[in-house]
Image (tube, rainbow, N blue to C red):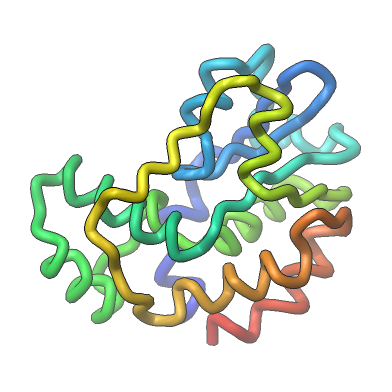
Length: 176
């Protein structure tokens, strides 16, 4: 998989929201709807360079990938098998199932400061509402190493603060 495959995703607006004193980068299928519904302020693109630290909530890679493909199938009235085939052939990419690493790459276009990575479960400490992580959908196997890069991201950086540059330089090879 090469990054040009993701250009249509990387060329969208990049948003960070503020809830209380925390600046959060909402990733689809990682509580982003809940975060947006509770946002006190939204920052876009070049406004992000003025922020000091951004929190990113990471979700289990397989659960997120499965949920994202199921959401895409429901929204587009497509069969899971068709979507899997299109993804396998690099003919389909969508923000609902794009690796979380791709989302970090997108953020890096506008923000080079420190990021704090936390497990999605920790979001319940900020917003005392159950985050919907439905697991009763069709289970989907990994394709094109979608899970590999996110599993490495979570394994190495969850519950840590660092810069996006360090993460990207460390894990970019996984996508090649």
